[in-house]
Image 1: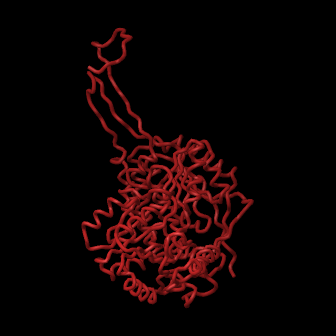
Image 2: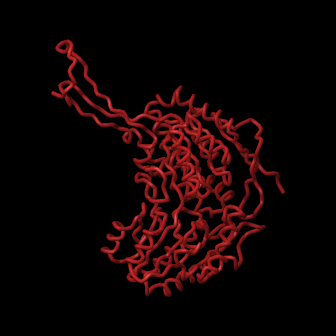
Image 3: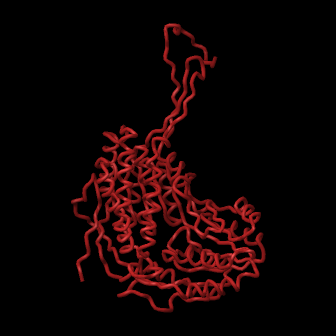
Length: 500
């Protein structure tokens, strides 16, 4: 067995040379073998890294021209595009998702980098000439300083790319803390930024756990926090961050519903339910975990879904498989526990993911796709964000009952409706209390020039990721009122200024 590789922080453009007091193991989820040993940052080290970022921002990057920034961004875009497969392989090795899914994740992150390449246009302010006699007013947007990104394990490349390109394009310095479960993709992406010509210290990577997170939340020189993760932690990050005077965008968990009306194309709906429910082993905040079937279609739809599930191959993501393992053994065991609790609560276990073979070597963290029927609110399998390959069918008698069910849920991240009725679809998009809506699209993740984010307990703060909301989050506005005097002006006048 080979010795685990040391994985460490990237500070001021180079790997950290210190000795970590604490470390954490990194595993290949498909084999169960430890492949890496991750250095965990102390609060003291986090403070040092923030100091490095602040110095880089003050000395150069905040005053860099838009031309300089876009040159770096375009170069980074080209490097990232060329390295998609390599970064995808790192994701598969540490997260477990199949290679095609991992590379697709990088592609979606690349779209945000492309959006950020247009930063000269995105940062244009407004100008009003002669608002008063010889007085002009104009607006500008300026960088914040040091900002922090705290990203989750399920999208180790895409989620950081939602934030970092825009933050850098807006003139900020960034400290990113990736998940300790799959840290190598962020290191690889950070190296591409350096290769693209980003000055040392503008982007730094610190690895760690709660100690590092708390240090970022409390450090006075960190001006903004971008976070994606479970709802309890998102709420914690928002509360602590705002209490320490920071801007915070904290994207939390989800329980995404897919409403299938009787007039829907059931083959299309079955395909969508399987793809959206079991892709990336269900470890997506936009995964469909609750299929709401408006009777009388449930039996036929379940039969079609079950047939498709029987054709899926679960195994090592580097092979010809459809679904990989879960990220850790502990998470796999937690997800598997819902199979027993669901049955105990009265749900019908149609397909048991603990049964069947997997295409893998060793003791990986596998759970095959699972399907429940007759699920109702109040059951743990419905109420909780399971974050695994478990799809629950909830039967309802009408569109109105389905809508009421969705709107009553504590989460409001994503949802979808499958129907051939344009009127029903239009009504749904207006009435559903969810931030991202798909019409015959099961995973309605918006393009980079729109913004990503949910409602209710799926979002803390009022700012969504990327798009123009991202640009505004990473900048602050300033309005300038200007008058250049000529010899006709002068004299004293203590009266209140008036427009004329």
